[in-house]
Length: 478
Image (tube, rainbow, N blue to C red; front, side, top):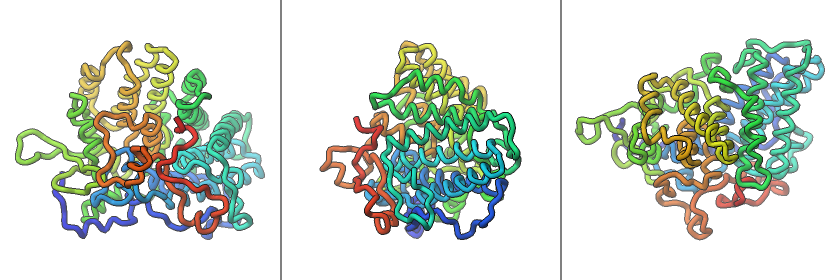
């Protein structure tokens, strides 16, 4: 735990957690890229770009909206004023540019295994982008300099594209032969095609489950996809920074914090959801995976302190620690995990009326996540046996499933999808202090989407939709 440092630390501005807009257009032409790319070079580039330049900057902003983290200065992003995440937009389309080059080269070399992986990566990036911005360029996403003003596709269309890409990927990965087989350039699975196939099914389950507010939601379709998804933590779709020379970006946030540039500060909402304040049971993941404990105000008991979103640091606070799971030097960045799949299963089974399956999946999701982030077996089992957790299948609720899934999705932008699908219905969840008055005047309490990057408004205004932070996305329109 730290005490507030002098205000020079608020030089956060556009670093990591501010979600800055880099002013890049959907040109998708990498000036540093070779004009004759290889499969072995394009695949790791697409994986790294997705992880480091799309997922991370998206998470670094959406963690404010889920109130996992809080701005040390009560920034405009934390108060729901400015939200564009232009760096994530650039990362998404840079990754898609790599993917399209990878797919073309895979077709030329008759390498369907590479093509299948490429389609999964593209589907992931389109899904990430459309869940932030809604309508996005999909069909014309990679025209390069030949089309600097791509048309936007409505979110429902993009969701169809995501599912089609995943279906095609599964088929490609089942091909009998491939002239080229992925190996060490696959920074995720090292060329294990079965794990890629199961990851594709996991993503199908995720995006089918997002439709819970729509008339087309089909819990049985979700469960069918879950049945084909990964079966253990070993199948997690994630980039492990031990396979890359760079450090995990959350570790860099931690290093900046130690150097006086504050970041990675825990929200008081996250702390009270995990320290026993709201649920009468201490969640050991708070200490084992996220932060250290420290005495508050000279008391004998270890304590935790979070920052009120929108208010900025007042006194003491906790932040992500390099000794924990998420901010270690070589910690992975998750795309989708087995634990998330189990919570998807729990939700879909509960909506389908299968309480027994829902309850088993709920408990397995907790167990899997605790094992993944290093909670000891004794502490894990004590938590699973607590009355507040082991409620029995007849007492399992969607609120409990969403509560546990929120912990398992710490620092994952997917968590913001859940907050909107669940209408921010978490105990004692409040809008940030000094919130943008737009939300008072519109009657919408919480941010529902981000705005398009300024580059799009400046150079593709005829296609970029006119949106507002309180406007709901297609799957959230209920």
